[in-house]
Length: 253
Image 1 (cartoon, helix red, strand yellow):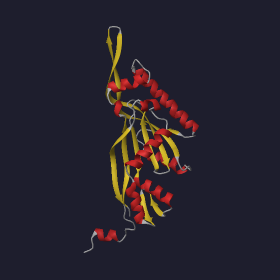
Image 2 (image 1 turned 120 degrees about the vertical axis):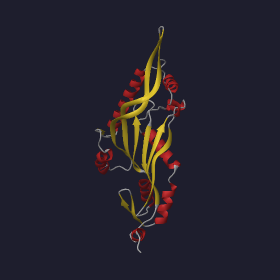
Image 3 (image 1 turned 45 degrees about the vertical axis):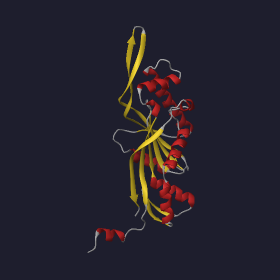
Image 4 (image 1 turned 90 degrees about the vertical axis):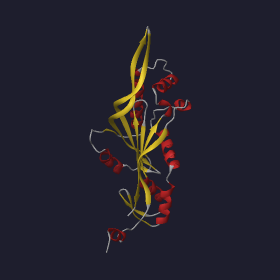
């Protein structure tokens, strides 16, 4: 009796195992508590850790992003609630001609676990206690074309503790590697239809790991408007990537 697997086997042209989409969180280990936030503001030169300072830093970052976009002729778009962001960005990606760069910057107001201050007075002294609460704040989506990873994006929260999210695609990384190595293939929207050297393609897929991901993240930290200055990082305020939110292994057809 013919089974479904038997029928599918006759139509398989390529069989590979490859990481599909990767969603990673980026956070600053030394900015997870109210006390650590105060230390961050202190090393920035703010001796009174007022929440007004956080607003000032957010506005400065907004100006930095807008200046970056103007300098590099990058469009900034505002996402309406409920829209599929990938669909909106698709037309910008289709028109993009450079080998590497920022295709478009999206802005969306979304929920974040940020710091909120409570004023505390003791005689003439005024202080602020910070706790983590759910807030709606702006996030910047930097949609990137990377020479090694192809299409990707980095989402940056504009408000402390400045979390980020990184989205990569293993299939797109493998396609870029094939192009660089001169290996011919037929592409699907999110995979491969065929490849002239399937064994080499599988070897390429197997190469993708933490080293390549860290290289991508470190490179774009230096290229994008960033929440941390060189002085911040020297003081120990650095990002760390953690927790893959979704990592799917797919078989090519």
